[in-house]
Length: 393
Image (cartoon, rainbow, N blue to C red; front, side):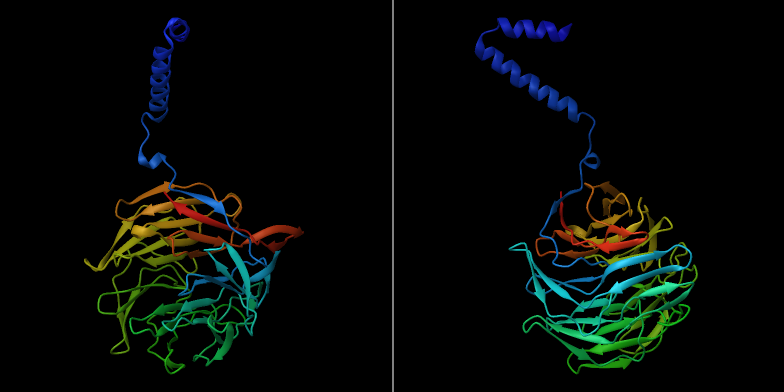
């Protein structure tokens, strides 16, 4: 055999020659192992464990402060499933801060109201605006829970203060930061009884600490997505109660809505996730295996390759790439390149469960925290304290 003949030659060859041959064989083996591999075969990123949170939580918010720290607030510390009628969460009001420089968590002041699945947005002042809450329970299509009002977190003083309430208290509303620093609260769901979508739109002015009711949406939407267009207009898409292709555009100067460019395929309530990219484009991902990209240059949508997994979280990486994490019981992570319309598999975030929260660190890495943890009893789950950091390759 060739291998035996080579071994015999190496035993007889002078020592320097043996070393040269050994190095050449090692290089040849490495080249053979990589033969035919492309960039798509390489992992798109890797995961490392970070310090765990002080308290387990799922459905919380994770907001990067001006200092680079991550404020984690609220969520639920447990969930109970009722396969016959629905679910219930135990919401919490606690908060904590993550320092990426020291990889440590510290206690922060607690909110006045326990809440989870809420909206949290960083203001230009450095404070964080928190609004609403998800349902604490949904049993037989009868949803209820503590929605709560609006609170402001001041990181310099580590205190929460109550802010004025908007025109309606709701869950599932979407925050949009306008170019002038004001915050739009769009859509949402009625908090009591059978869920009903809203058309209500309110705008919060941080300077005057007041809400103003704005022109309503053209269609009811729950948890929609948005993109800021050239000139400061707002494109709103997704979150429809029934499958549809409609979008709408808000003009802040005239306080008016007009129909926007329709999507190419219908998207439904509760299944779409959108982000605006640094390029100004917007990506709409749908769990029913359809993806689209909006271009502000053409003013229209184009189909994109859909995500191969159900999406639990979506984050923007450097260069406009997207990190998606999903699959409840066997977590997977993939990176999407919108310009090339390609998905690349990343290492698996093995210890991250569903209902986790993602936050982008100053380094460009992504921090995933919490989620559904261990099963403590029949159909009862505790929240995880696990934290992992994704480093793109």
